Image (cartoon, one colour):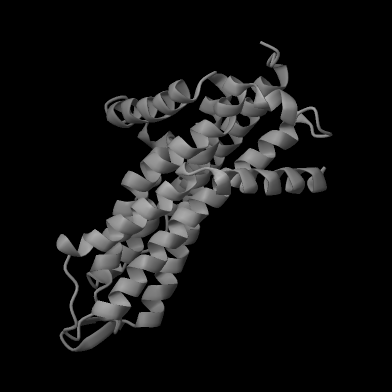
Amino acid sequence: MIQRILTAYYAECLKAIRWKFSYLGPVLVVAMVLFAPLVQPIQRDGSGDYGFIAFATPMALNLLGLILLLSFCACLVSSETASGTIRLVLVRPILRHEYLAAKFLLGLSYALLLTVMTAVTSWVLVALFGDLSGVEYGGEVLYTGTQMATTYFFGILLTLAPQAAAVAYAIFISVVTRSTGASVGASIGIWVVLDAVKYPLHIAPILFSTYFETPWQVFTNRCSGIEATWTPGIYGCLGASLGSFAVFTILSAIILRRRNLQG
């Protein structure tokens, strides 16, 4: 089974490489980071410019990057259902849940690509035009450059959890809809509506969308010289994200398994 999933994943990667929209996400998040100095300037003045990184990374990933990720994943199944390509794919010796697993792997890979492109661009900009000398206050080094880089790395690892949940959510929408337009519109529309009503309805703690800023809070606070801990925020982030990922994944598998693909 694992070999069939990996083979299907390889085929999905080849299709994504030929799909022009695949390149739009990395290009746009990199462009957003490159233009971020217009809002959050960086300069060589002997003071660490980690504040720029703390500003540019969530801005690129949690705004434009998130919309692009949802749009990409929302097309993965619905586009093949609408065109009938999915019937040809499943003619091969691959089960429906294996086909779906390959889609999830592709979505996670795309999320990782956007994250890496954003991170690399942010740090390279500061390395070229700013300072990575650490966080100082009153001549005292509060956090070294190595400590800040380590904190950022843990933030990246943690942000993969809500991103994985977003991938599962968008693919679930892609499974239950029959057209690409409806899938993309529904995935973004439902997201916006829930984000607007989650606090009035007091459902924010159980929605993974609430925790997209959580991975960057420690890094952001340390940029200002404020000590911060990962707990208890990390528990809510991981719990809501992994729980949502499991629910959407299971529902997608059940629906796709029972779905009539002949019509």
